[in-house]
Length: 71
Figure 1: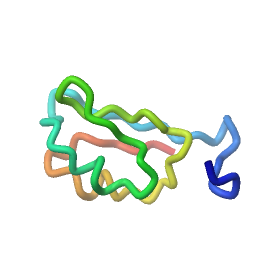
Figure 2 (figure 1 turned 180 degrees about the vertical axis):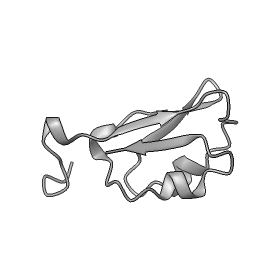
Figure 3 (figure 1 turned 90 degrees about the vertical axis):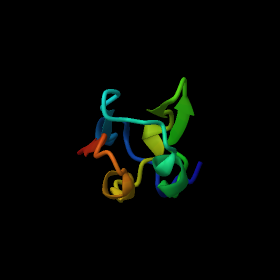
Figure 4 (figure 1 turned 90 degrees about the horizontal axis):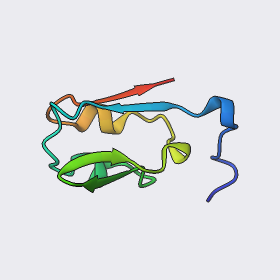
């Protein structure tokens, strides 16, 4: 963990994946520079939300528009 990038608990971003839209393609896994996502049971799951840089690359690259990053 990079302490300079770690946010305080109250500043942790919320990541919402719409499981009805998500196809489990893995674009978010490949796009995220800090490895926030994993594919579990065929769907994207944010497993390291505290590492999120809020770069929104996952939102921009998701072909289904299934990801929302909420600050």
